Image (cartoon, rainbow, N blue to C red; front, side, top):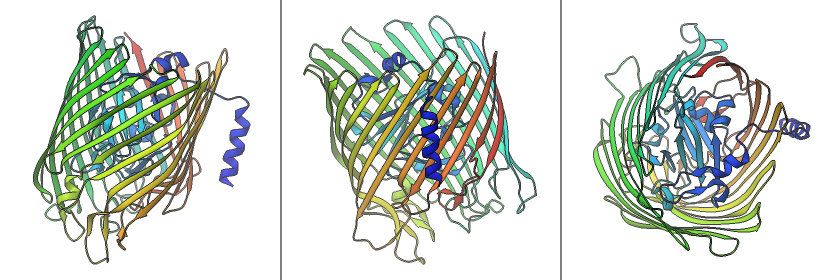
Amino acid sequence: MRKQLLFMMLLAIQANAQQEPEPSSALEEMVIQSNRLRIPISEQNRNITVITADEIQKLPAKTLNEVLSYVAGVDLRQRGPFGTQADISIDGGSFEQTLVLINGIRVTDAQTAHNTLNLPIPPEAIERIEILRGPAARIYGINSLTGAVNIVTRQPKNNGIFAHAFAGSNFKKDKEGNGELFNGRGIQLGGSYTAAKHTHQLYGSHESGSGYRYNTAYHNNKLFYQGEIIPNEFNKIDVLAGWANNSFGANGFYAAPGDKESQEIVNTTLVSVRSRHRLSDRFTLSPQIGYRYNYDDYRYFRYDLSKARSQHYSNSVTAEISGNYQVNFGEFGFGTEARYEQISSSNIGDHERENYGLYGEFRTRQIPRVDLTLGAYINYNSVFGWQVFPGIDVSYALQQDLKIVFNTGTSQRIPSFTDLYLDQRPGNIGNAALSPETAYQVEGGIKFNRNAWETKAIVFYRGIQDFIDWTRETTDVPWQANNVGKLKTTGLNASVVYTLEQETSRWKIGVSYTYLNPEMETNHEKSSKYRLENFKHQLVNTIGFTKNNWSLLLANRFNQRISSKDYFISDVRASYQHKQFNYYVDFQNIFDKTFIEAGAVPMPGRWFSAGIKFNTIL
């Protein structure tokens, strides 16, 4: 019935259709932020999805986590909603197999990917989000086993002030606790300053609330700074710094039902410096360095810190130099990187490791109608030794707006410190004998963009060797990380977007579908924590309408997991722009559906919130 309702709704609106984002000419000029080859989105052969700043502002979302949940193929599994904690995976991979970057600088947590999305960046500071599907070692290095998410921050063009306040509730009371009405609220403040040769922007935010069920209260504080220095037309320096401190009730996060009184505090600091130097008309060089500190304090009994408490302190430093050299017959990209990771932990111990890599790529369009990119990444890890990861992307233009694409690539995921060394008996133990996961993927399909239509359909096959999962034979022994076998996944990504712009109104309708068929080859007859939890079917539909100063966006998501029941979620945002003020209301999970994304954590039911944004140019 729900599927029929959705299908009828799409047919009814298709006669009017949609859009609200940037014009297609602006989209064609958008350059995907690879660290070496700079390829416009219209010329990309890879399976890439881009969420623009305009789309982010119209979604019924107030956090980065919520924004990512509207992308088909992305599995955003929240343990703590409202931006507290979430795991991200792409096209059926595990949450450890997706690489997250900010402006091309990796921020993945070597302790555990559970903390990867603990980021200080507010949605208002994001220019776009690039989601690259498939193994991406040739582009971003290791740990991009099933894909990568690159968050590109915006550069201010004017002096300005920004403020945002919101509040929400499900209008239910905490009957197990103090009887308080469940609620959430937040305030964000920001400003930008621009001059001839430098720009600066600063954001600060505080979000807190009693949550949506017993022991889900949260307190999140964030600071974010970004600066750009432009000494002359040939050189540019970008500086980024951020701090995020999240404290939240962790009821059911990891060890339900015994962890009903658990709490977690995650504190993350990020600093990066990146520059770009045009040494000649053909040669560009770009060095960068990034630092990430993370503190994770998990309290199994929040009222008794003398037992079952885990504290982890981790540091990582990444340095990279990338270059680009253009010749008459193509373009070369090259680079080298070094990464140091360290942890000091109460139940993981003290460990460190180093990683070094070399990149090489070449792109040419000299063959008529053919766009070819090939390259390789050579990696050395102080624990796991040498590896080589080649890849190739190619397209053939049947006509100007229709092309066939083909890609094949490889990548690797090095086990986290938790996978290797955790000692949290009797619950979980690591395995120092683990081998890295390696993947290869082959995909092909079509892309068609003409006037108001943007469509693509891509099929792929991916094989992951030495897949790591947490398993156990009986319930009286701990879960342990093991290489359990080969995970083979066949899948389909398809999307259609139609845009209709009129004098005073715009319509947009977008439909994206992902189908995944995983098959595990293993001799282990053990219980598994993660491998059978990915999507089987995922359908995402957004319908946007704008008229004068009014805007309405309806987002529908149908998710069916292999190991659980399907669920259908509808969210809506209505907003009104009056001078410098934007007023909005959000209705999330309109039909009050009960569902679980991770662990034993039921997600919020129907939730209502309202907010006001103030944005002015000085």
